[in-house]
Structures are given as structure tokens and as C-alpha cells.
Length: 265
Length: 291
Ligand SMILES: Nc1ncnc2c1ncn2[C@@H]1O[C@H](COP(=O)(O)OP(=O)(O)OP(=O)(O)O)[C@@H](O)[C@H]1O
Ligand SMILES: [Mg+2]
Image (tube, rainbow over all chains, first blue to last red; front, side, top):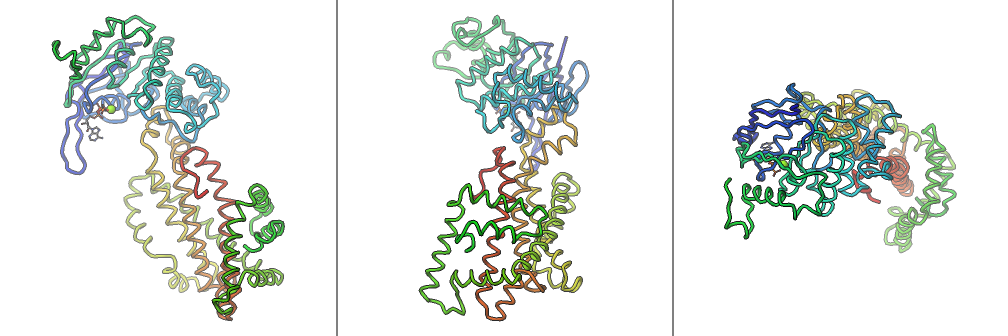
């Protein structure tokens, strides 16, 4: 079943000072089947964030439609949970209250809310930090809370815009594996935006590649690396290495070794 | 000031006697005592140094005593004034006026601040007007206010309400504007209704703005009160200072100044700072203010 369908999306931004129009997205279409982990990658400024923001309902598209389970979306809603790059945790709420917030808006009772929040806290490995405020946590722990806050409400799809870009390289690897572990348990549909090719290949079932601005879908690759995946055996995985190289070339990120053997776009 | 430096135990009693207008008078006094018990040196040392310098300067006799008196003289005047009941009565009058004016000012300021900050149309309409009236300083209102309301408590209240309200509104609007967009987006995508977003995102998110607005507002209000008492007054700390000047009584002018300083310090240490500590500082929204 198709969970999310993005159809002929087009986005033109008009500069409020100069009145100049920028075509950010020319024409982007793709589908995300239920339970799939799909990444969107592309060069910087090609409109990845714009696509995600339109799907989330934060930005109104100038053209095209976004459908969730067949019905067009307009405005943000709890059916699409968003994990933000800057975490966007409420600073005045404890970890527990942040995670329970979505349940509260759904009218879930206090006792049940507690139990569910605790379950999520344990799931993401934040046990013992329930009563801390976000500023008392490390970046990695904050994003764990960000993920737990979204998972708690069981959205139809999870939207993530470079969720690990604000943490250090080592923590990033740990979080990627953690999120995959959780995802493999629950199989929530995920739309994941990143500019990190390794991350996209490691995490996803499919990678949608956008062209430079004004963007269109340049490639749509399926990734057949068996799960569960872990970083320790990724660099010797021939499929990983192959797709990674293909994507690198496509994005123009060529290393010295690869310049000689340029593959087709 | 000198009372505190000379004897902490007296300071406690003095504080209790000096703040009768608040119905829960035991609470700030107890908190003052607690503050002194917890960090007596940190609290009193800076004042002790100032008083020491002051004492030395006056002992050197650089200035004639009709211009400049030492802490001992001021302390005597203060004790005398307290004993005759004048100072407590005047402080009570001033604080009552400030409390009445500040209560109205805070109420109006908070309501208008959120209204203007959150509603696009209200903001468009109000902002120019706000800037216009902001330019007319508190004391610039006194002439017309006196014509309208005479030399009355109403006049004083009007001026204080005015001075408290404007900085508060502007600071709340700035505080609301400073709430990160992603927090609002997060709330919306977690299904929060308008009211829930108001209570759980806008209100706490604007608290740094509210607290700095309250600080500025009360500070201005306090100054406006003294100015109003000098011009309109028949009692109060400002009146006392002005009256003392007329009689060439420098030491009571100094008493007035010391009282102003101590009262403001106590407002900060006993009311504003604890509130900030429990909220905006606890949440990591602001660094500690001046501590
Ligand atoms: N609110 C906006 N107003 C005007 N132009 C915008 C706005 N948001 C994005 N743009 C423009 O649209 C284009 C796409 O931006 P977007 O943020 O979606 O790119 P991105 O692929 O997420 O980039 P990055 O990899 O750097 O995060 C850019 O050229 C950007 O300047
Ligand atoms: Mg982006």
C-alpha cells in the first residue's frame, strides 16, 4: 500500500525584498510504500528541506499534491511526526513531558501517558533522564528524545530532516544504528532527508536522488542490503560500496581514485 | 543599608517592619532572613565596602556637612525617623502606590503584550501608536495628568501604570518573536490546538521577555513613583527626600536614597530572582542575571 504520494511538486519562492522568484523545486514526484525507509538526497540547496516541509505541512507548495494514505494533506498534523535537525524540544518541559506532549494533545489520560512515555524513554535509551530538561542533555540524547517524542504518538509516517547533522561523527553512527534498531522493531514508514550518502545508503530501503535546483528526481535506487545492518560490516559489503560509489559519482563527489572510472549518470 | 551591615538580626526585624503592605509579610521577611543565613558574606560584603568608602570619604571632611554626611549620621536619622514612625509610614505609602500601579501595569502590559505579539492585525494597528507613546516619557505626562486628576493617588497610579506597561509590552512582543519557529512547528505537528499552543509554547517561550519586561517596567515605575511623589506628593519616600532638601536636611535625603536602593535590591532578591531561577534559568533559556 502507498503510504505517501508526492505528485508533481513544485515550489517557487519569491524574495520579499527584491520580488525575485526562485524555482526551488521544478517537478518532484515519488511514492513511499507503507513500512519503507526512504531517503532523499541531493546537492546542497536543491530543495530537500523544502520537500520535507511541504510533506509536513509547514510550507504550502505552489504546485502539486501530497497525499497521505490517499487523502491530500494540508497543514501540519499528528499523522506525520517530525524529527528536527535542531531537536525542537520544548526547553520548559522535562524529557518525559516532551515525549508525552503528543499523547496529551490526543487526550490520553495521565497514567497511560506516563506508561507510554516511559516505554519510549526505555526504547531510546534515556532511562534515568526522565526528569531532566533538554538543556541538561547532550546533543545525541536530545535527538533520542526527539525520536521518542514522535514515536510515542505512532504517526503514519516519520519525517526526518538531517536529524543527526547536529551531533558529532561518533554519536551519529551510534544514533543511526539505534534508529535502525528501533525502526526494524516497528517498521514505521520513514521519509528521511540527508546530504550524507553513507547515511542514506546505510539506513534506507530506497534512495531518491534530487538534481540541483530547480530540482527533479534524478534517480530512484533500491537498496538490497539485508537487515539488521551495522556499521562494522558495511565497508566490506559489496552492495554498500557499489551504491555508495554510484551515488557519489551522481552527486559529483568524486575522489581521486574514482575520477578515472566515471560511471553513467 | 547601614542597618543590614551593622547587624543582620536587626535587618530581619527591619525588613519585617518595612514591608507591611504585602499581606503575606512573613514570607519575604523569612526569605530575606534565609538569604542572609545562606550567603551572609556574599550578600553583605559589597554593601559593607560601599559603606566603608562612604564613611572614609565623609571622615576626611572634604565636603561640608551640609552637603555630605557620613553613614553614622544617616543611620541615626534613619533610626530616629523609624522611631517616630515617619519612615515606615512613608515607605508603606510609596510601596502601596507602586503596588497598585504595578498591579494594573503588569495586568494591562501582559494582556496587551500577548495580544499585540500574537495577532498580526492588532500588531499592525498598535505598533505605530506604541512607538509614539513610548516617546512621551513618564514625567512628560505629569502636567496633563495633574490637570485631569489633581494631586491625587490616581495621578500617581496613572503615571506608574503608564511607565510599567510600555516596556513590558515591547519586551513581551520581542520575547514572542524570539520563539524558534521549529518549536511552533513541533507543537503543530504533534497535534496541539491553538489554546494548548498558547499555554504550553507561547507563554513559557515568552517568559524571558516577560521577565526582562517586568524588570525594566518595575524599575521605571519605581523611578516614576519617586518623581511623581516629588511633584505631586504629600507623603512617601520621594516626598520625604524633597521635603528634607527644602529644610536643608541632607541626612534625610541620604536616608531616602538608601531606602530606594535597599527596597529595589529586596524586590530583586526576594521576588524577581527566585521566580527567574525557577523558570527561565531552570530551563536554560537565559544565563543567570547578574549573579
Ligand atoms: N523560505 C524561503 N524563502 C526563499 N527561498 C528559500 C526559502 N527556503 C528555501 N529557499 C531556497 O530554496 C532552495 C532549496 O532550499 P532547501 O532548504 O529546501 O534546500 P536543501 O536541499 O534542504 O539544502 P541543504 O542541503 O543545504 O539543507 C534554496 O535555493 C533556498 O535558497
Ligand atoms: Mg536542508
